[in-house]
Image (cartoon, rainbow, N blue to C red; front, side, top):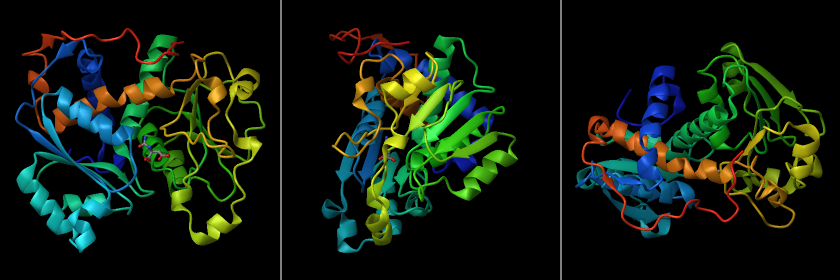
Length: 343
Ligand code: NCD
């Protein structure tokens, strides 16, 4: 394993399983029962050149909960890239200031290019339509946690990935990550023109998984274990696509009726978020709010233990995490949301 986390391509199954275990060890800290200071004195550079709420804040919070501090910059306008600085120069300079970098950038491959110019660990927080490896890791961690509670196994599970599978970097990383494990059944449903790239389908199939593409959700999916929905990434459309895309039809909407009529009582619903709640966006329906099958907020919460695990591993402090742990003294609510219910 290199000292960067740029793509799922460089991860082995053993390493991923190790990170899952490490994330489990982070739960007392992520759930605010314990405090650790293992990264005291370390500084994270959190560079986000594309919109973000949860990825930026959860990386920031994860580093802080390990005792480190964080420098932040958001958007090109307030960075020296607006003055024409190259990725190489920015990277070299940042390496002199901070101990780790999280970078989100609109161009595919930009984070890898940035990482070439520095020896401090660099994490890909999303590079255009490329990859989002930490999101895939927290998604897999969520699936494992939910399955453990439901008495299910990952092996042989049936997952539905739906939405914008062409531009969604989270599903690109997730399908690669899932392909490292024992045979799964993966069904892909997307509006025409937004299908999963062929090379990713070929990769997963060549590793022994059963992949099926369907044209709408108007089918019976009876044995689904996981529905992973994604937002239509209109910001990545070419002008031509924007002109021809007529919006997402009713045939692609995951809502309570779809779950009740076409799935099982233990099918969990995931989404990397944000979900587009504007009228006509037809993203994951809000009528599932409060339904215990809706795992999206538990999934977002899992960003903290998984990102803590990634930092602890890349900065090589895994062995010291519990050593100086203390109890939390401030008020922590029993659940974080007013509608929180688990299956
Ligand atoms: C996603 C992203 O930025 O790729 N969000 C996230 O990081 N959780 C998904 C999206 O923007 O639709």
